[in-house]
Image 1 (cartoon, rainbow over the protein chains, first blue to last red):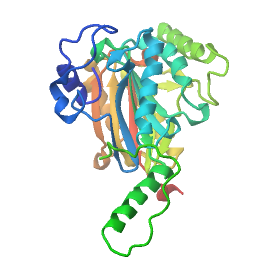
Image 2 (image 1 turned 135 degrees about the vertical axis):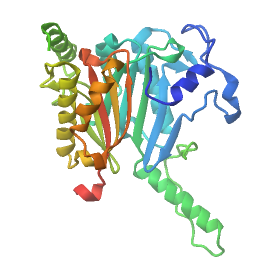
Image 3 (image 1 turned 180 degrees about the vertical axis):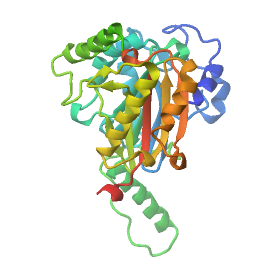
Length: 186
Length: 145
């Protein structure tokens, strides 16, 4: 049983997907929004970004190698989603770890720790649950959007304002970091 | 706490500590911080009913009482209080404990400041705990700095 209200929908959407490493965890029932599940990978609001539960998957297939491999891949996926918001792992304030088997707790901890600066670890909750796709672990995260993303928001606002009036002052210089801005922001 | 549970917790915590040198970051034997600020929010890690990393005796209710005390103390250490708590997730090892959970829960919150809450049973909790409680508290930076 998961915590996220979206989970039951995801399970429904993936009925018929069998074991890991073989069938893709992909169902196009919800494809109209451009993503095969009724959710966004991330949503930002109020200076925070919520990252939907990530599995140890690449191209909707669970990676082989068991618990540690899935933890590593799930966290890489979290990092990739954060990057689309100009955020990094150091910006994460909270994670929730869902394990298919809570006895994997110690092994998960060791794999998990490799992805973080020990001085900047997020708050965390861990529970053993039943997971879709026969995944061994699912990881969701909340991160703060830092000064860089705030600066980009101000930049976009300035550009919108500039477009809206003639004889406006020149726009500020483009940021050096060209990471795609949070295209999935609410 | 039964001797068996004590052994489990002790074993789990010590294995976490000893499994790799330097595994324990700073003052906490697990790879997490008890409280992290995110903007105007204080995020409190899932609390189990432990004292010095030993689950307390007395079953779910005693563990919940201790977990909520840990939550309260964690918030206080960062300038927050239970009245700032906006959202709580209660994870039970057994949904049959739901009714017993509520009165203990109410001991820690004012009726006028009850947080939003989700409660459910999960398949298992770390250390064999009976209950785990996490919380988000709204404590604007200006209020504490």
